[in-house]
Length: 203
Image (cartoon, rainbow, N blue to C red; front, side, top):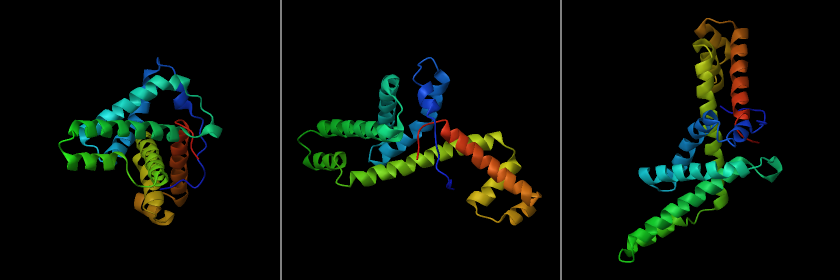
């Protein structure tokens, strides 16, 4: 599913985690971003334990720097900042592996150097990160909304927006009026937008 309208956000979660006393905000931040960072690290070739370490290091770095982070959309998006921190931590992890391989294992050394300094276009890499970032926010928000609404409301949304079924067909399947199906779909999309808007700047 894609949202047709741009997601205009306030960055309220970023403001909340600047206060280290707001543990609920930090827990929510970790819930959202840890899977994203971990998955990206794995894609870059790190094993499970190393990817987990990278994710923890990134979160620790963000936690230490967030009090100095001033949200200004004109200066760039938070996801770009997070991408840079994540990529740097992955680079450090690979450099450690290159060093631990030692000079006696040339093949391993060359392989690790190649992964640590990929030849791919950085712009393509960041584009992939942005796609994964958007998908993660959508996944998180969708899970939250599904837990908030009735099963029938979620099914009406899911069948029309994700399965691309016609409203009339969905209405007959769920025993609802066509109008009720449209209302349910609109309600869920609106709530997903609201949740994403509460997280960070976007398009």
